Image 1 (cartoon, one colour):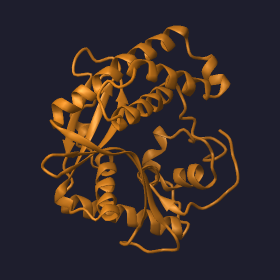
Image 2 (tube, helix red, strand yellow):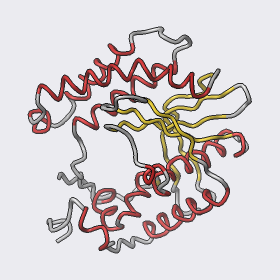
Image 3 (tube, helix red, strand yellow):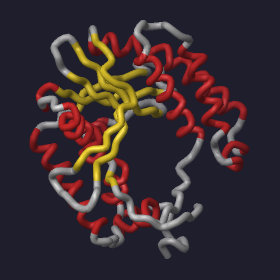
Image 4 (cartoon, one colour):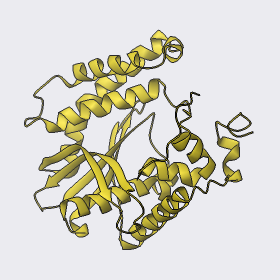
Length: 269
């Protein structure tokens, strides 16, 4: 856990809202005091590599216009080499080989799965940046910051926001319907609509699960609904987060202590 300079953020993102919801004091430790929570691993390297390959897959004009598995291998090697030395040295050769093979297999399945799920589509954007004014709560220069993995546009004129999630075998129904998990897509829908002046009823949101160890349905796309009520609830949580961060209120959420990496450390005795 490394410390750097203390600086209050000038933006809010889905991940920072999730951290604040988990525990405001955890938010302070990681987002303001800049203490790393030790999240890097072969799993994060795998996810970043596959996201990079996905971006290139959908930006190509023609399916199969480059070697998807090879592209993943190149990205995976790069991401593994960027991990801290102590983490790299703890990864077994078997795990490296298994993860690389799993990623190569997934890379070939992604575009066909999207074709089957959406039908005919065009790529509107991949890895699109969001940095939008928070009109619902104006304070200083706070903005909403996000990165949308993929936006596809179908023949019916609808925009489809997709967020890719790498996992082992899939998600339980409880996680698929968890409000905090799905708020990520709710925020993306809200701020994408504002950025491009697109009516909300023309935007649909989806998660795409990329499953390393599943025996079937290794790429699973499913829709997540975000109606007016859900958007309102998500924005209310955003407002609470920004208000409390702006006023430097970082009260511990003791209900989260049992799963917090900072429990009983110098950062949270």
